[in-house]
Every structure is written in C-alpha cells, then in structure tokens.
Image 1: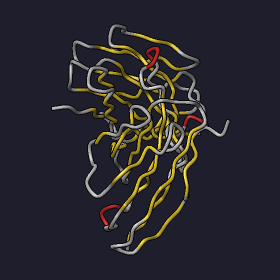
Image 2: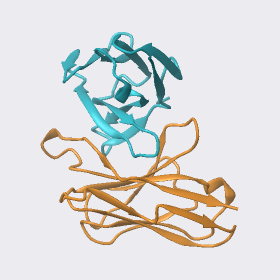
Image 3: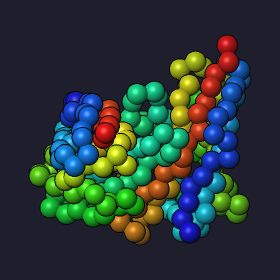
Length: 113
Length: 115
C-alpha cells in the first residue's frame, strides 16, 4: 500500500550539532518528495524538495538525500539552531495521479541548549 | 501578499451544527487543498481542487463538502458536525505542477472543536 512513515517520532539534538531526520516510503512510483517544517501553532512551511531522478539536493543549511533502492529519504540540518525546533514532515507526490500527496506523521526536533 | 488566509481561527460547534471554513489565496495558484491534522498525526487530505471549477476527494472526504468559488477561494463545509471532526484544518494552495512546481503554501489553520 501507500505509506510515508518516519523512523523516530522525537529527535533531541544538541545546539550546533547536525540533525538527521529520516523518512521511509513504500511506493516506488513516487515522483517527487518535499520536506516541510511546522512550528507550533502554524501551518507547514516548505523547506526543500527532491525529484525521484535525483539522489541529493542541497539548500541553505539543509540537505535532502534520496535512496530509491531502500525507499528512504532523509533531511540533514547543519549546525542546528534553536529556531529549528519544530515538527518535520516528509511528503510524497504522485505526479501521474493528479498530484496526489501523502504526508508522513512527522518527527519532532527538540534542540538541547 | 497575504498568502493563504483562513477564517475563522477558532470555532466550537455542537454536534449536528453546520459551518463553513473559508480559505483564500492571493498568489494566483491553480490548485487548492483542505487538510485535517489530528494530534500526533500527519496531514490528511480531505478534498482538493486542481483548477477552478473542479474538486476531487482526498483521503478522508466523508462528512465534508467543498466549493471552489473562484480561483482565489476554496471553502470547506461541515453539514452536520460530529466529535470525530474535532481537528485542526489547514488550507493550502500551489501551482499544482505547472512548470514542475509542487510546493504548497499553507494557511495558519482553523482549530475546530465539536462537543
């Protein structure tokens, strides 16, 4: 079936360290993936995306890695800051199915001082 | 640009009451979406509209109706609210794949409690 899941519901990271948030997906037909950040009381906010024909994409302090062999997606945040505290969702998009989007349950990133 | 706006921000309903959640976007986006988010859960798609004049069911459409009033506005209606519909509702919009852009912009959410 279709599912987008996350390995850990909560991740605690020391300020200044790198964070790695993981996401597993089950449908090899997925075309496109997006990572969103959701701060408390707000709607999700786009962070970075990656197409299925890529294995890595970098943004400002963030890198997304896609391993299609094991159907795994990860978001790496460099030099984690207090402002990075949020819930992070991965989303899977099926472009040949009217752009159907499936969101994972989310991982809460907690920054330790 | 205001982005995506939603009204109301909070609402309490009694079981059986009806209400409409309003959503508007000023980015000229083609696609609009309604999601619900329950505690400890990801976002679940209720309905979406790929373009003005079209609407389609998402993952959890039962108990809801939608109207794409024009390109800017997409409303969600609960005809007879039930406690199971207590949730936070998010509206989102996007270009819908035009030019390969799928990024969704989300509104601030509506917290709905049904007693």
